[in-house]
Length: 260
Picture (tube, rainbow, N blue to C red):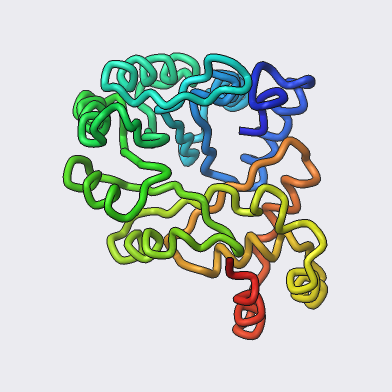
């Protein structure tokens, strides 16, 4: 999402810097990149292909459909089946793929039954244009409905140390063998601001608060797949290093104080 320009619109000021971030991420061992057709719109997918195609065999590039961008300040839901099918073709073209490894419904469209939106994704799956289907921004009841229609492989909801509204969804993912992808893992920056609890745990490990917040997510459940975004190489390296941070029971108990 952050690879695009201001307000997630247009090309970034320095496209080559974005490409360097993508390439170094893969060099550091990152094997999952999450994007969406509305980031730019189309810009992030274009940059990913420019940086990484032909893709390493173990790299999964996941994209989404369900939002359209009439202008930089507008995010409009559109999950009509015809739009989902057309968006898939556009994403395949921009990403230079024959099959999308993971195609996610970005949101439910109030004007369209959820089952119809996912039915279009199932059709794409049956046609070999999508390998796996994911959903995003759904509550527990919506997820149950989705799973009656589609073989849901992943759920992407907002979730972090301070926002546990999707605890039930996470538990379902862990129990049912689905991947849980928490967006806003750093609380849109709020978890990296001055925070005595995070600062104390981070200081005990010689780490940064952001690394602790990411390590907490990784320790929260084996179903969790973190997707911190960045435009900077130093932040990328810091984020990747968080995977090596082991938080103990006392750390986890202390961090419970941040529950929203």
